[in-house]
Length: 200
Ligand SMILES: Cc1cc2nc3c(=O)[nH]c(=O)nc-3n(C[C@H](O)[C@H](O)[C@H](O)COP(=O)(O)O)c2cc1C
Image (tube, rainbow, N blue to C red; front, side):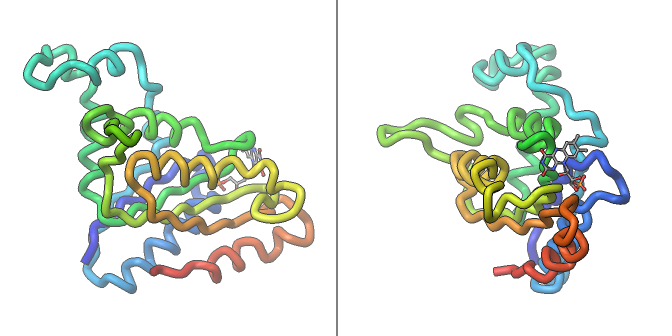
């Protein structure tokens, strides 16, 4: 039995491919770990704010010196960090928007990247503190980026792998629904993505 956190960041509602793919990944995780609990959050729907100056300043204030105003300015970050640490398995929906992740997912990353909480620095460089989690990424894209000429512009999977790895989430698997706008590819793209799901 695991606790699954499914983060979504699509702005296409019921027609979202990354949400469909993410839901299918969640369903396979639940098959493998019956009784698992699920928490879902659509970062685009909640209008997650950008990390602002007040929150960033507060990241560096010792906990016992926080004023009520400081606490208010990092409440969202604290909640997202708590939710992240509680998860055994993460499923992250990552629709490709203008060559990268949606800004709502980037905002989530900015809120959970907390010095002394989710990462630190040791003598040998950065230390990720969010360890022991399995991460599945449900990518969706109009073009094809895993192969061919689009590969040079594959910024989403390498970025998530590098950055979540920096936070300690080094066990990451990407499933892609890709070519969703490419004639001759789009007809089978979702079916192929669903067939590719393997839970290890
Ligand atoms: C504003 C916007 C920008 C997009 N930019 C890209 C892009 O740069 N490259 C690409 O391959 N697809 C792009 N797409 C297509 C999306 O990746 C595709 O619609 C995908 O299904 C989005 O995921 P979703 O269905 O979960 O919302 C874009 C779509 C939108 C709405």
